[in-house]
Structure formats: C-alpha cells, structure tokens
Amino acid sequence: MTDFVRPFRALRPAKDRAADVVAPPYDVLSTDEARDSARGRPYSFLHISKPEIDLPNGTDPCAPDVYAKGAQNLRRFVQEEVLVRDDSECYYAYRLQMGEHIQTGIVCAASVTAYDSNRIRKHEFTIPTKEDDRVKHISAQNAQTSPVLLAYRASDAVEEVLEAVVADDPTYDLIAHDQVGHTIWHIEKPELMSCITDQFNQMDALYVADGHHRSAAASRVAASLGTKESLLQDDANHRYFLAVAFPDNEMQILDYNRVVRDLNGLTVQRLLDKVGERFVVTPRENAVRPSGPKQYGVYFRDAWYQLEIKDKYVPDDDPIGQLHVSILHDNLIEPLLGISDPRRDSRIDFVGGSRGLGELMRCVNNGEMAAAFSLFPTSMEALMKVADAGKVMPPKSTWFEPKLADGLISHVLD
Image (cartoon, helix red, strand yellow):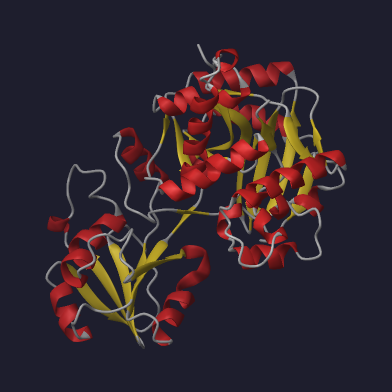
C-alpha cells in the first residue's frame, strides 16, 4: 500500500539564510509587485518562483525563457549554498502565527496516487492556463517549490507528536513580509516519523484547501514521468507532491466578498424592493459584518443594509446550495443582477476578507463599483462536506489566512 504521506529530503535555506530567501506565495503577487519585493534581495525566492522579474520588462511570464531562468536561479542558489539539501528524509512541523491566530501543521510529501483516486479531495475547478504554468515550472526545475495547503480532520495522536516536536528549538523562526510568523522544526526521530505516517494512513481523506493548480500539476508531471519504466514505482519522488497539512480545527477561512460594477439597469431602491422578496432588508448606520451564515451586508454609496435570507429559500440537503456564496448568487446575484457565470463575467469581482470592509466601501465610493456585498466566511466543515460529496464549490468561496511562504522548503523530484 502506498503511504498517504511520507517524509522527504527537503531543499531549504541554509540556517542563516532563511530571512534572505523567504518570499510570498508566487500567486499572490503580480510581476511588478514581485519585482518591487525582490529589489535589493538577490536571494529572494521570487527569483525562482517569479523569474520573469530577472528578464526585460514586458516578458511573458509563461515564455520558455522564464522557466529556464527560474531553473538557472535555483541551480545558482544551490551552488552558492544558499539552499541546501537534507541528508536524510524528514517530516517538518510548520507553525504560522498571524496576530492571535496560531496553526501548526506537518510538512510532508503527499501521495499523487491518493490525489488521483480522490482520497486527497478537491473542491475547486482549475484554470487550464494556470495549471499549464505549474506543470512547466515543476518540469523545468525538477522540483516542487510552492507547497499545497492541505487539511485533515484533527487527530489527537498527531497533535501529541507536534506538541513534542515544538518543545524543542526550531530550525527557522522568522517574521516574513506579511508580518506573519513562520516557524519550522525538523522531525527526524524514527518513532515520531513512523507515528505520523501511520496516523495519516488511517485517515479517510485529506482536503486541498489552497493549491488546486499545484496539486493538479503535480499529478500531470507524475503521469508524464511515469511512462518511463524506471519511474513507475509508487514510491518514486515524482509520485508525491509538496504539502503542509493542518488540522481542520486550526485553519482560518476569512470572508470572500463580492463587488459589482452596475445594478443591471435597476435603481438602488428598485433593487432593494426586489431583494426584499427573498431577504429581510434592514438599513444600518455602520458597515455590516455578517454574524452568521444567513446574513449579508450590501453597500451602496453612503448606505449599508443588512440582508438575511428567508428560511424557505435555503435548500435542505444540497451541500452546494447551502453555501453562503451560493445563497447570495442564486437569490440575488444571478436573478437580479444578471450575472450567471461569476468565473467569467467582468461585471463582478472579489475582495478577500484580509482587505477589510473599508476596501469594499472604497471600491464603491470611487465609482469603480456600484455595490459591494459582505459575506460570512465559509466553514471548513462546509468545504469538507462539498469535497466528500465529489462536488465543486463556486469560484472564490474561500480565502485562507495566513498564507504559507515560498522558499522555506522545496521537494526535489530526483
């Protein structure tokens, strides 16, 4: 039987170089933002994860030269011993701290076989061009350099292992660009590693929380390499992908809010009249942060309203239809505003909860948007329920914070 997760020989910063290397995830920065972030930092991992910053302005981020430059930079970091490879296979504990929120998980290599058989479960569609980009990035560098964020149902046994590990001195302990604390410990005692492997093997499922394109790309790379007879073994490195798995009860999902460019030809009052057929509409003097899953806020210029869906419009047994984002879409966004495909319709955009309700108001007050909707965060239980049912959540349903850093640990596919 293929292990669900396993230890691996990480490629990681030398002990005193972690702060030089650590970088934001590749997919949260534009090219210009990455270039600014890496300015004056020759060993920022952005030179590997966003290598177009080292090529002329205007270079297509998906051009062959970009992937070749990333691979060249990775080799240079290794040759200059900024990045070093562990001699033996290990797990690693990874703690994130953002303000008062703390979550501690396990860095591991997760099974592509389990992913392909849906034991590692998805809840999002991928975008083909973004998936292709990750395939080319992994193939050029022969490494997975950005971890997939996984969730597992909390386990007392795994928690006991982590408690024992974090009592020792960490390998890295730093505060990154985002003011989030990133702390990593080696887990190299054989008995602890065996316990982790055994406990995960007993789990029914893991869940992709963030990183659907990375995990899908890993599967595609494994399939392409697996055509070679010498690489068919299920325990080959390319049959696993870089991941950090956290217990579901420690993960934090923030609200993922909506802004719309126009009211589909309606006045504000006419829209509110129509909204009132399915929602209880209450004017509010202050910004509305929903306090429960059936509540929403809507902001027009200088005016907030609280919306609460009437019970008869909430489906009883549909894990997709019961989602907060689905209720808003099915009862307001599509029927009243005429936006049927939020994935492709340019009239709608999305604002992550970390940017605050003030960002929603700014978008409307500056005339860019006509209205903004604040939502209650999706729960981990709802996400896992959708994934267990083999369903796909609507786009932009979850915003996980804090984010994992790039560069602290990579997985080489030798």
